[in-house]
Image (cartoon, rainbow over all chains, first blue to last red; front, side, top):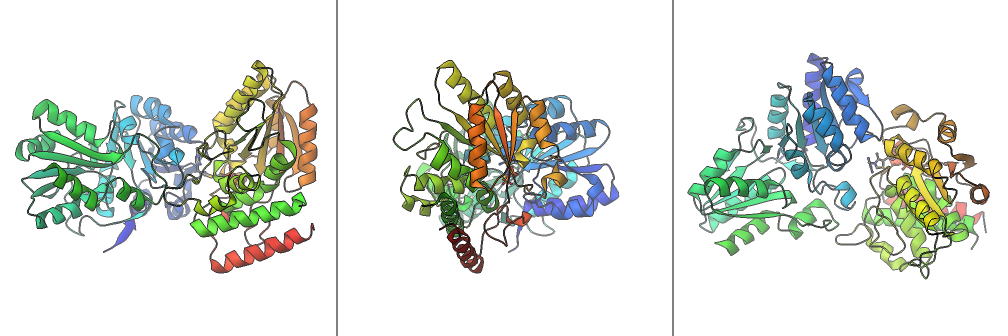
Length: 309
Length: 272
Ligand SMILES: Cc1ncc(C[n+]2csc(CCOP(=O)(O)OP(=O)(O)O)c2C)c(N)n1
């Protein structure tokens, strides 16, 4: 199985597309290396803007460029984009409705040993609660590519969070179901539903297989689109299965779990339980260690569902 | 121990932590070391005993990624057991990769660049309000100066006439993506600070005596804060790390680790 970081795919797609479209501009804040954009910056130096360690300026300049017809792709750690430059994201991107795609790299607990300054455990809540901002957390390279290609076609603001590490494929070459703003059914099932986003989809998929061995039929939904969220898929799951478990690399407040619970409660009340990060700085460690610690992996998901059923 | 030698001994601790943990920001740790040694061994009135008192001198490591250097110094000054350095960045450790006030001796949590100077302004202002004689020291990176918040704080520092505040710029000319001049031009650094109303002193930043003299001058300046632009060498002390942009957060392999310790020993020995 291939292990490729989602940022690498974004770099590759942008190199290709920027060659065809001079209006594509990539912006960084001393973050090109972390963003895997070294190759892009060398390939398209005229379509690359480095602003230095200045995330507020980064987003504002991107918005200014966009207001003059450029297609701005901003790459900076998710922790800084979603907090330091949040007012710029709110006012200059979402409110002014500029064609800026904010790519939060090294998202969630990717920088697991670096403390809360470097973790973006509440970026979904912040971004999704901002009118005009769409929010996406793709899981693997195939989905990241489909998402990026779709977003290259539109002119609306969006926030895309990706992780730092190479991730295993969830989908297969040539078989990547994708519809913009619609969740993807990874596995169908009738007993319970697991809804996950971003890197958590990998664990949810594995959990689905493990549960099958235990004769539990789990529906696994990849909710890569946090906003707009796929209400239809949630309501259907709420009606057809007796439990929804959400899994996210985000605090439980205001993230995937909160949104799913709200849709379910309003339309088809069912028990919704969420696994996520705690309301405190996450424990220090490599992200895989952190996921395991908080039950954010296949084992943790299976354990949680076994307890609940 | 001679403090110049001490700076090299502490560099060995830094290299050890990073080699063990396989993570860390070695370049900036090595460039900032003499600044920390001067502050913690000569200038600052702060000890494990008085750290909780209202009168001790305050320190903020605004370039928080150089935490390994700070941990090494704090351990050596007795704020926590040296043994603890071995848990740096380990799973569940409180000694994470940026300063955290869960660790004894650390005042404020940093890691997101561009916060330290503003925090320092607040600390210095509180000192004035409370008629305290403590001094406040902040260390920033030169790349960090691109953050607008630094200049908001700089404005406030001179506006409030904070002569109890001394800032350092670790002017090593490098950041992650290249030289500061390639990434976002920092030329006329001295003029900028002066224009913001600061007393500006430029020193060779890995020269302990020069740093100490500058801090002494800063203590005598009235009605304005001082910035010490410390012209340092990123990676100072290990020849193959010095001035190499790639060594911002590179981790030494076995061979490099051994070579680094050997060279640091040699360089330290000249001060015996
Ligand atoms: C707000 C913020 N943006 C980005 C980073 C990521 N980052 C960590 S170190 C660094 C480069 C710092 O360069 P400089 O200030 O010159 O420090 P030094 O060269 O002394 O290590 C960057 C961009 C950060 N920690 N905080």
